[in-house]
Image (tube, rainbow, N blue to C red; front, side, top):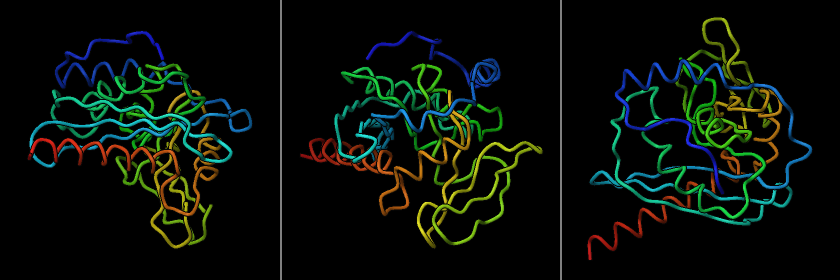
Length: 231
């Protein structure tokens, strides 16, 4: 899988914030792709318990059966500090290494991160979508910005996530009586379609299958690397 270099990663926090504001203008939060999807990918990153190494995993699934079609991983050293709101500058370089190993690009990507539900409207999912030129959805377990009422307890119920009076996402119940997820459009998709994709990919768990499988794979890679190091 090939893609163009969008920018350098050798940036200070101040430069990264300035770049986010520029890139946010390029994000497209429109387009419904739910009926044409064949391959959907999940992306996640796992950190080593000790030290500065992390591991990215991408899992591509058949959109209808949710069977795994392809996986890719990459490991490396953390080079950007943890700063709330700048997660993509820390994790995207290693994630992009994993995406480069895929033989065929997916039709859509679910990321365990924010899309436009971000103070500067450029969470990791949106940033990733710009790099790859693909539809992306932010599917986060926690809130970065905004406020939302708690939705009803049944699967599929949701409430809007507001930030400064703007709807930037949804608090979506993906499993009955289980904590909801924060869903937002990443790039090249509208919020309604993003929520529909997430619900379609949920197969009895809180997390949609693509990000659940990516999380499991990144943890397996991390555990394997830690075991080799300790031998």
